[in-house]
Image 1 (spheres, rainbow, N blue to C red):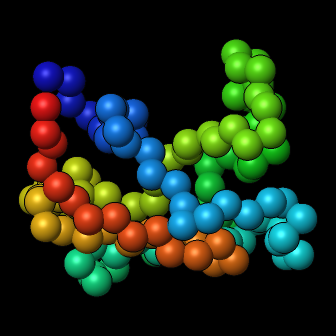
Image 2 (tube, rainbow, N blue to C red):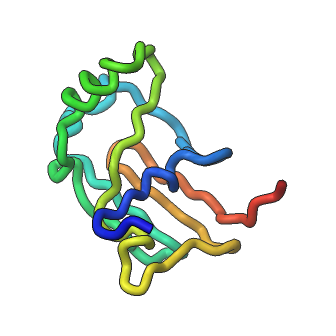
Amino acid sequence: MRHGKLNITQGKNFYRCGSVGPWMVTADEFSGGFDDMRVTTRVNGEVRQDDTTANILYDFSYLIAYASTWNALEPGDIISTGTPTGSGARLDPPTWLRAGDTVEVEVSGVGVLSNPIENETL
């Protein structure tokens, strides 16, 4: 096991993951731009993450340019990025999602995505 930096990329890239919604909006719907949008994540109503895109490591134009170096991006493509402080893997002790939990992610100007957590069925 590698110690040190924690990589949570796997949590965003497995079968049947990557929820989006409840709707998508286009760039022209954001009069204030993307540089200071609030992103809040709640688990069972408890705030776990609360930050703005002003604190993102790389701005959106850089991320799009970088992703396009290995992908031919098309309208409607989604680029998944990092996560604000507060993910369960980084808590002490780590706190994992369990069946019956509800995760809500709210983005200012977009809406709230709410997902129930269920055990996998194979």
